[in-house]
Image 1 (cartoon, rainbow, N blue to C red):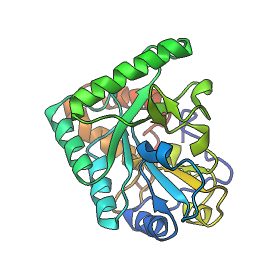
Image 2: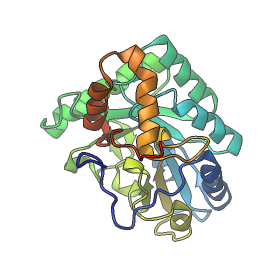
Image 3: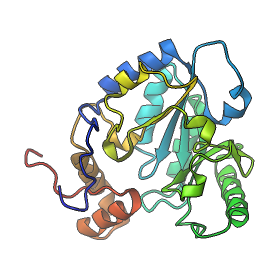
Length: 267
Protein backbone atom coordinates (compact mmCIF):
# COMPACT_ATOMS: atom_id res chain seq x y z
CA UNK A 1 0.00 0.00 0.00
CA UNK A 2 1.12 3.53 -0.60
CA UNK A 3 2.11 5.94 2.17
CA UNK A 4 -1.35 7.44 1.99
CA UNK A 5 -3.02 4.17 2.92
CA UNK A 6 -3.76 3.29 6.50
CA UNK A 7 -0.83 1.28 7.92
CA UNK A 8 -1.25 -2.28 9.08
CA UNK A 9 -1.37 -1.57 12.79
CA UNK A 10 0.28 -4.08 15.16
CA UNK A 11 -2.35 -6.39 16.52
CA UNK A 12 -5.03 -5.22 14.10
CA UNK A 13 -7.37 -7.85 12.65
CA UNK A 14 -8.89 -7.81 9.18
CA UNK A 15 -9.10 -11.48 8.24
CA UNK A 16 -12.81 -11.76 7.41
CA UNK A 17 -15.20 -8.99 6.32
CA UNK A 18 -17.87 -11.34 4.98
CA UNK A 19 -21.52 -11.40 6.01
CA UNK A 20 -20.92 -15.00 7.07
CA UNK A 21 -18.51 -13.86 9.77
CA UNK A 22 -20.77 -10.96 10.70
CA UNK A 23 -23.64 -13.44 11.21
CA UNK A 24 -21.50 -15.24 13.81
CA UNK A 25 -20.78 -11.96 15.55
CA UNK A 26 -24.46 -11.01 15.63
CA UNK A 27 -25.39 -14.42 16.99
CA UNK A 28 -23.20 -13.66 20.03
CA UNK A 29 -24.68 -10.17 20.35
CA UNK A 30 -28.19 -11.64 20.33
CA UNK A 31 -27.46 -14.47 22.78
CA UNK A 32 -25.11 -12.82 25.28
CA UNK A 33 -26.18 -9.16 25.16
CA UNK A 34 -29.30 -7.00 25.09
CA UNK A 35 -29.06 -5.10 21.77
CA UNK A 36 -30.16 -1.50 22.37
CA UNK A 37 -30.51 1.53 20.12
CA UNK A 38 -28.06 4.36 20.82
CA UNK A 39 -30.99 6.76 21.21
CA UNK A 40 -32.19 4.68 24.18
CA UNK A 41 -28.86 4.90 26.04
CA UNK A 42 -30.08 7.60 28.44
CA UNK A 43 -32.95 5.38 29.58
CA UNK A 44 -30.69 2.40 30.40
CA UNK A 45 -27.62 4.19 31.73
CA UNK A 46 -28.21 3.12 35.34
CA UNK A 47 -27.46 -0.23 37.06
CA UNK A 48 -28.81 -3.22 35.20
CA UNK A 49 -28.96 -6.78 36.51
CA UNK A 50 -29.72 -8.27 33.09
CA UNK A 51 -27.30 -9.13 30.30
CA UNK A 52 -24.85 -6.42 29.23
CA UNK A 53 -26.15 -3.90 26.71
CA UNK A 54 -24.81 -3.83 23.15
CA UNK A 55 -25.20 -0.59 21.24
CA UNK A 56 -24.58 -1.43 17.58
CA UNK A 57 -23.75 1.71 15.61
CA UNK A 58 -23.09 2.31 11.92
CA UNK A 59 -21.49 5.49 10.58
CA UNK A 60 -22.55 5.89 6.94
CA UNK A 61 -19.62 7.83 5.50
CA UNK A 62 -19.87 6.93 1.82
CA UNK A 63 -22.89 4.87 0.78
CA UNK A 64 -26.47 4.48 1.91
CA UNK A 65 -26.91 1.83 -0.79
CA UNK A 66 -24.24 -0.34 0.85
CA UNK A 67 -25.95 0.08 4.21
CA UNK A 68 -29.28 -1.40 3.08
CA UNK A 69 -28.16 -5.05 2.76
CA UNK A 70 -26.79 -4.96 6.30
CA UNK A 71 -29.97 -3.35 7.65
CA UNK A 72 -31.99 -6.17 6.07
CA UNK A 73 -29.68 -8.83 7.47
CA UNK A 74 -29.84 -7.33 10.96
CA UNK A 75 -33.61 -7.46 10.87
CA UNK A 76 -33.38 -11.13 9.90
CA UNK A 77 -30.83 -11.74 12.68
CA UNK A 78 -33.08 -10.06 15.23
CA UNK A 79 -30.81 -7.14 16.11
CA UNK A 80 -31.86 -3.50 15.93
CA UNK A 81 -29.07 -1.01 15.36
CA UNK A 82 -28.41 2.69 14.84
CA UNK A 83 -27.52 4.19 11.45
CA UNK A 84 -25.87 7.61 11.59
CA UNK A 85 -26.04 9.38 8.24
CA UNK A 86 -24.30 12.49 6.93
CA UNK A 87 -25.86 15.66 5.61
CA UNK A 88 -22.72 16.59 3.64
CA UNK A 89 -21.24 13.32 2.37
CA UNK A 90 -19.43 13.89 -0.95
CA UNK A 91 -20.57 10.43 -2.05
CA UNK A 92 -24.34 10.44 -1.45
CA UNK A 93 -27.08 13.04 -1.26
CA UNK A 94 -29.16 12.34 1.82
CA UNK A 95 -31.85 14.70 0.47
CA UNK A 96 -32.41 12.79 -2.78
CA UNK A 97 -35.53 10.68 -3.36
CA UNK A 98 -33.38 7.54 -3.50
CA UNK A 99 -31.75 8.32 -0.15
CA UNK A 100 -35.11 9.11 1.45
CA UNK A 101 -36.40 5.73 0.30
CA UNK A 102 -33.34 4.01 1.76
CA UNK A 103 -33.73 5.81 5.09
CA UNK A 104 -37.42 4.95 5.21
CA UNK A 105 -36.65 1.28 4.64
CA UNK A 106 -33.93 1.27 7.31
CA UNK A 107 -36.39 2.75 9.81
CA UNK A 108 -39.14 0.33 8.76
CA UNK A 109 -36.82 -2.57 9.60
CA UNK A 110 -36.75 -1.45 13.23
CA UNK A 111 -33.49 0.47 13.16
CA UNK A 112 -32.74 3.98 14.35
CA UNK A 113 -31.64 6.77 11.99
CA UNK A 114 -29.44 9.43 13.57
CA UNK A 115 -26.92 12.07 12.52
CA UNK A 116 -23.25 11.59 11.61
CA UNK A 117 -22.06 15.14 12.19
CA UNK A 118 -19.02 16.38 10.24
CA UNK A 119 -17.31 19.23 12.09
CA UNK A 120 -15.18 20.11 9.07
CA UNK A 121 -18.00 20.19 6.52
CA UNK A 122 -20.15 22.22 8.91
CA UNK A 123 -17.32 24.66 9.64
CA UNK A 124 -17.38 24.09 13.41
CA UNK A 125 -14.04 22.32 13.96
CA UNK A 126 -12.59 25.46 15.58
CA UNK A 127 -15.86 26.86 16.94
CA UNK A 128 -16.52 27.19 20.65
CA UNK A 129 -18.64 24.44 22.16
CA UNK A 130 -21.79 26.58 22.43
CA UNK A 131 -21.68 27.61 18.75
CA UNK A 132 -20.95 24.02 17.70
CA UNK A 133 -23.85 22.70 19.75
CA UNK A 134 -26.22 25.20 18.19
CA UNK A 135 -25.17 24.00 14.74
CA UNK A 136 -25.55 20.37 15.78
CA UNK A 137 -29.12 21.15 16.80
CA UNK A 138 -29.70 22.81 13.40
CA UNK A 139 -28.24 19.79 11.61
CA UNK A 140 -30.47 17.42 13.59
CA UNK A 141 -33.44 19.56 12.60
CA UNK A 142 -32.43 19.30 8.93
CA UNK A 143 -32.27 15.51 9.17
CA UNK A 144 -35.62 15.40 10.97
CA UNK A 145 -37.19 17.28 8.06
CA UNK A 146 -35.74 14.69 5.67
CA UNK A 147 -36.81 11.60 7.63
CA UNK A 148 -39.97 12.91 9.25
CA UNK A 149 -38.87 11.41 12.56
CA UNK A 150 -37.02 12.66 15.65
CA UNK A 151 -33.22 12.41 15.66
CA UNK A 152 -32.40 10.90 19.05
CA UNK A 153 -28.68 10.25 18.68
CA UNK A 154 -25.60 11.33 16.79
CA UNK A 155 -21.95 10.51 16.20
CA UNK A 156 -19.08 12.62 14.93
CA UNK A 157 -17.04 12.29 11.74
CA UNK A 158 -13.30 12.67 12.48
CA UNK A 159 -14.19 14.47 15.71
CA UNK A 160 -12.21 17.08 17.56
CA UNK A 161 -10.66 15.86 20.79
CA UNK A 162 -13.13 17.53 23.16
CA UNK A 163 -16.05 15.57 21.66
CA UNK A 164 -14.48 12.19 22.49
CA UNK A 165 -15.45 10.74 25.90
CA UNK A 166 -17.82 13.64 26.36
CA UNK A 167 -21.26 14.02 27.94
CA UNK A 168 -24.07 11.56 27.29
CA UNK A 169 -26.16 14.20 25.55
CA UNK A 170 -25.06 16.81 23.02
CA UNK A 171 -27.65 19.27 21.71
CA UNK A 172 -30.27 17.18 23.48
CA UNK A 173 -29.34 13.96 21.64
CA UNK A 174 -27.39 10.92 22.84
CA UNK A 175 -23.77 11.10 21.68
CA UNK A 176 -22.11 7.93 20.45
CA UNK A 177 -18.87 9.46 21.73
CA UNK A 178 -20.11 9.80 25.32
CA UNK A 179 -17.79 8.50 28.02
CA UNK A 180 -20.60 6.21 29.24
CA UNK A 181 -20.52 4.45 25.85
CA UNK A 182 -16.74 4.29 25.56
CA UNK A 183 -15.91 2.13 28.58
CA UNK A 184 -16.12 -0.89 26.27
CA UNK A 185 -15.83 0.09 22.63
CA UNK A 186 -14.71 -1.85 19.57
CA UNK A 187 -14.71 -0.67 15.98
CA UNK A 188 -13.83 -1.73 12.43
CA UNK A 189 -12.66 1.82 11.59
CA UNK A 190 -10.28 1.95 8.61
CA UNK A 191 -11.03 -1.74 8.01
CA UNK A 192 -9.12 -2.83 11.12
CA UNK A 193 -10.39 -4.24 14.39
CA UNK A 194 -7.64 -2.75 16.53
CA UNK A 195 -8.35 -5.02 19.51
CA UNK A 196 -8.04 -8.15 17.41
CA UNK A 197 -10.70 -10.59 16.24
CA UNK A 198 -14.05 -9.10 17.33
CA UNK A 199 -15.57 -12.44 18.35
CA UNK A 200 -12.72 -12.87 20.82
CA UNK A 201 -13.19 -9.28 22.02
CA UNK A 202 -16.84 -9.96 22.84
CA UNK A 203 -15.75 -12.76 25.16
CA UNK A 204 -13.51 -10.40 27.18
CA UNK A 205 -16.07 -8.04 28.78
CA UNK A 206 -14.74 -4.77 30.15
CA UNK A 207 -17.99 -3.07 31.16
CA UNK A 208 -21.74 -3.57 31.42
CA UNK A 209 -22.27 -1.68 28.17
CA UNK A 210 -20.63 -2.43 24.84
CA UNK A 211 -20.63 -0.07 21.89
CA UNK A 212 -19.63 -1.69 18.62
CA UNK A 213 -19.10 0.43 15.50
CA UNK A 214 -19.49 -1.36 12.15
CA UNK A 215 -19.08 0.46 8.83
CA UNK A 216 -21.23 -1.27 6.16
CA UNK A 217 -18.82 -0.26 3.37
CA UNK A 218 -16.27 -2.90 4.49
CA UNK A 219 -18.70 -5.84 4.42
CA UNK A 220 -20.10 -8.06 1.66
CA UNK A 221 -21.09 -11.59 0.70
CA UNK A 222 -17.43 -12.59 0.44
CA UNK A 223 -14.34 -11.31 2.19
CA UNK A 224 -12.22 -9.08 -0.02
CA UNK A 225 -9.40 -6.67 0.68
CA UNK A 226 -10.75 -3.22 1.70
CA UNK A 227 -8.97 -1.48 -1.16
CA UNK A 228 -10.83 -3.73 -3.60
CA UNK A 229 -14.12 -3.02 -1.85
CA UNK A 230 -13.50 0.71 -2.19
CA UNK A 231 -12.23 0.39 -5.77
CA UNK A 232 -15.44 -1.36 -6.80
CA UNK A 233 -17.50 1.29 -5.02
CA UNK A 234 -15.69 4.15 -6.79
CA UNK A 235 -16.16 2.51 -10.18
CA UNK A 236 -19.85 2.16 -9.40
CA UNK A 237 -20.39 5.81 -8.43
CA UNK A 238 -18.03 7.44 -10.94
CA UNK A 239 -20.65 7.72 -13.72
CA UNK A 240 -22.97 9.51 -11.29
CA UNK A 241 -20.47 11.72 -9.48
CA UNK A 242 -18.27 12.51 -12.48
CA UNK A 243 -14.57 13.27 -12.38
CA UNK A 244 -11.70 10.87 -12.87
CA UNK A 245 -11.14 7.77 -10.79
CA UNK A 246 -7.99 9.35 -9.34
CA UNK A 247 -9.91 12.46 -8.31
CA UNK A 248 -12.59 10.39 -6.60
CA UNK A 249 -9.94 8.29 -4.88
CA UNK A 250 -8.26 11.42 -3.50
CA UNK A 251 -11.65 12.68 -2.33
CA UNK A 252 -12.27 9.34 -0.62
CA UNK A 253 -8.91 9.53 1.16
CA UNK A 254 -9.66 13.03 2.42
CA UNK A 255 -13.10 11.91 3.58
CA UNK A 256 -12.35 8.65 5.41
CA UNK A 257 -8.55 8.52 5.61
CA UNK A 258 -8.36 5.41 3.49
CA UNK A 259 -7.45 5.03 -0.17
CA UNK A 260 -8.64 2.60 -2.81
CA UNK A 261 -5.28 2.84 -4.59
CA UNK A 262 -2.72 0.04 -4.70
CA UNK A 263 -5.10 -2.89 -4.46
CA UNK A 264 -3.33 -6.27 -4.17
CA UNK A 265 -2.07 -7.81 -7.39
CA UNK A 266 -4.61 -10.64 -7.26
CA UNK A 267 -7.42 -8.12 -7.61
